[in-house]
Amino acid sequence: MTALLSSNIVQTVLFGAALLGAISGMLGAFAVLRQQSLLGDALSHAALPGVCLGFLVAGGRDLGSVLAGAFFTGALAALIMQLIVRRTTLKTDAALGIVLSVFFAVGVVALTYIQGQGGAASAGLTTFLFGQAAAILRSDLWIMGAGGLAALALVLALWKEFKLVSFDADFARAQGLPVTWIEGALTVMVAFAIVIGLQLVGVVLMVALLIAPAAAARQWTRALGSMVVLSAAFGATAGALGALISASARGLATGPVVVLIATAFVVISMLVAPRRGLIWQALAARAMRARISEGRVLTALQDLANAHDDTAYKAERGMLNTALGAAPHAMRIQALERRGLIQQVTHPPETTPHWELTKAGHAEARALSGTPTDADKDTP
Image 1 (tube, one colour):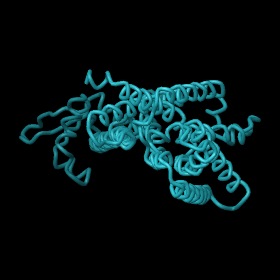
Image 2: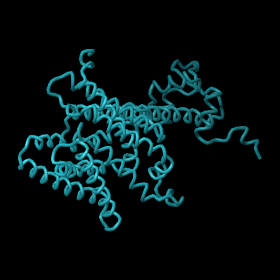
Image 3: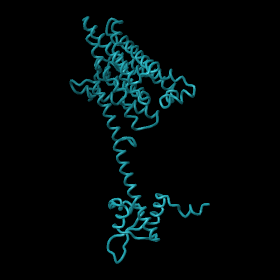
Image 4: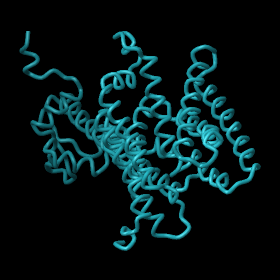
C-alpha cells in the first residue's frame, strides 16, 4: 500500500476522485431534494456534444476547451428543459427524455464525425463516455479545486435561498424570492458538477456519482446542512476507495468502481439507517406489533376485572384466549411481567397459572382504553 500511494499517478487520481466525489455529493444533495435526479442523467448525456464542440474549437483534446464546451451544452440543455416545461403542456419526465435523447444523439453524431477525420487525439474522446482516471493531470486538480471552491462559496452565500427553494418553492415565491433564477443557478451547478467529473467517470455513469451519495445521506438525516456534509463525505470516500481499489488491481476502470462503491453506500444506508432503513423499519414494526399485542392483553385483563368488579381479578390462560380470540404469545406475557404490568399468581384450588394486573398495569390499561382515571374524574 505504501508503494502504491507513493506513485504520483495514484496520488493524482486518488485526490481527484475524492475531490470530485465531494463536489458531486455536495451539489447532488440539492438535486435529490428537488426531485430532479433524472436531470443529472439528462445533463450528463447532454454534455457529450459539448465535448466534441470543445475539441473542434480547440483543434485538439484541450481539457479546458472540452470542459467549457460540455458546460455550455449541459447548461443549454437544462435551460431548454425548463423552457419546455414552462411553455408547453409536457411534463418534466417527457422534457427530460427529449433533451437527453436529442443532445446525446447529436453528441454521438459529432463524435463519429470527429473520429472519421482521423488523428490520434480524436481517439481519446471516447474516454469521456466511460471516463479515464489515468488521464487526470496535476494541473487538472487545480481546475477541479477552483471549481469546487467556487461552488462551495455559492452554496454558502445562497444557503437560505437554496434551502427554501429545495424544500418549498411555493413558499419561497410567496416570500418574494426569485425562484426561477435560484432554480436556474442550482441547475447550472448540477451541470458544473457533471462537467468536472466527465474525465473520471464519463457521461454515462456521472449521474450515479451525483445522486448516489446524496441518496445515501438522505437516509441518515433530515437536516439539509448535515445531509450536504454527509453526502460530500460519502462522495469523497467513494472516490478515494474506488481510486485505491482500481489502482491495486489490473484492468479495473476507476469510474465504474467509484460508482459501485457509492451505490454500496446507498444499499447499506437503505438497510441500516435509523428510522428510514429497511431493517430499522422492520424492527420498529415488530416492536409496534408487540406493543399492540401486549396492550390487548392488558385491556382484556382490565375488562375481566371490571366485569367481576374486582381489581385483583385473577385470569387464567383460557379466559385470556377467549377474551382475545386467540392465545397470547408467551413472549408477550413474559414481557408484561418484566415491565411489572402483570404478575403471575396462584388461585387455589386451581393449579393452572393465573395473572392479574398490577397497579402500574391498571394505569397502563386505562391509558390504552381511554378510561378516565380517578384524577380525571375529580377534575371539573
